[in-house]
Length: 201
Image (tube, rainbow, N blue to C red; front, side, top):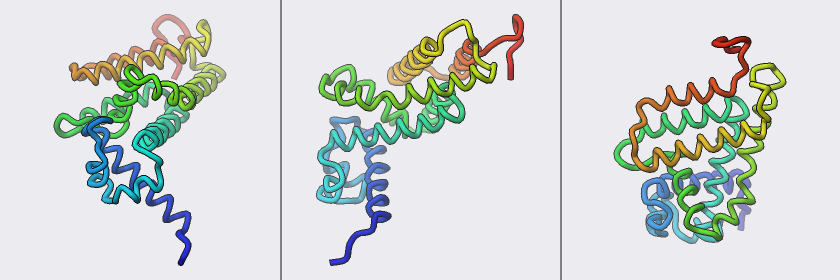
């Protein structure tokens, strides 16, 4: 019997994650039944759960995958850009179903509030985005672009609270037309000023 290549296994895993992402975004965690996961991925339950032990393991892997992608954006462009991406995804979504990162993030936030077991498992995995944000802010501080009167740890917590507030706002379906301006204000608030009204580029 021929061995399956690692490239094939990686491609199959990616296929499952991509299909599951759309399924969880559309139906939520509880509504993403095995039948719907099969339809979204184009694979049988046996193929899906060969790669992932159960639905929660699949969802955690998906959330981790999105957290890694968000951390990559943070490393290059900062956490505010992640928030701008969430807004852009919401604007591009057709119908009532959230897309991509936003859908996953909404489900993560909901389950953190309602599922203690999930909260415990997620706590072990949630440090990546925080670490990327802190590292980005430290680089900005060292380059003279970040305000230096507030500790980086505090600024990290501030930006993460804004992110969670944005996710909650979007989850409630509240208007988001002016939120880009709000994010401009958030970005401005962490930058270092040469003098009143002047911001370092």
